[in-house]
Image (cartoon, rainbow, N blue to C red):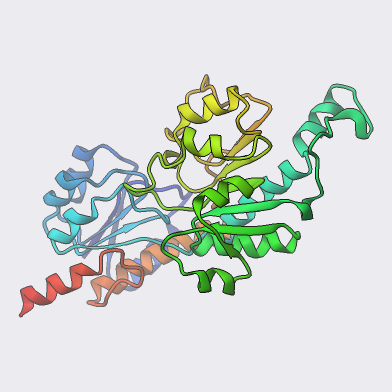
Length: 329
C-alpha cells in the first residue's frame, strides 16, 4: 500500500514515516501543487495527504485506487468533496490539531488592540513617553468591551472561554447552533444585526463555504461601530478585501487584525499591509511545535485507520459510507 503526500509544511516526515512503517505502508512525499504533477505521482496511491494543493475533480477522477484523502488542516475547501464522494473516496480533515493555538492567537490580537500595544511601541520608537504618548479617545477597560463571534464552532467556543477569562463580554451569531448550546457556554446568542452593532471586536470563526465566501463586505462594515475592529483567523476569502480597504479608508471601522488573506502570500505592495490600524500575521495562528506534530501524527493515523478497513474518525463526507454499502449490497 502507498500513501502520497502532495505538499506539506513539516521540516521532516519522521512521525508519519514511523507510523506508516509499522503498518506496512510506503510513503511518497513531494512538494507539488500543480494538478499534472499530483496526478502523475498519485494515480496509483491508496491514500492521499494534502496540504494546500487543489484536489479538483480532474485529480480525483485520475485516482485509480485511492480510499482516503486527508486534508492536513481544519478547512477542506481545496478538495472537491462531491467528486470524491462520487468515486467512493472518504475525505477527512484534522479539525482539532490547533484549537488552542488559533484561539490563543485570536484572543492575543484582541488584547493587543484593546491595550494598544502597537501604538505604544510605535510611540516609544518615536521618542515619546508616558500615558499621553498615544491617543486615549475611546480607550476603554477590557472588561467594558464586547467580542462578537461570527460562528460558534470548536475554536470560537475556546475563544469565548479565554476572552471571558479576561472579563470580556462575549456574544455570538451562528444560525446552525442552538440558543441553549450557546448559552451553555456562557455566551449570548444574537442575530447578525445585533452582533455587528454591539461588538467592539468582530472575530470570524467560520469555515470557507459557498455561503460564507465574501460574506463580510461593505454592508457588514457599515453596520459595525466606527471604533470596532474585525479579527480574522479563519479564511481570508470570508472578507471582501476591497470592501475592507474602502471601509478603513472611509473610517467606517477602526481597524483589522488578519492572520489570513484572500491570496497567500499577499503581494508586498498589498494595500492592507503597512497600515497603522491593520495587523497582519503570516497565517501562523495554528502553529506551535505541538500542533505541527499533532497534525502530522493525526493525519497519518487517519490514513492507517481507513487502509485497515475502518471508518475515518473525522469524515467530512459521511454519505460516502452509504454509497459504499450500496455497492457491496
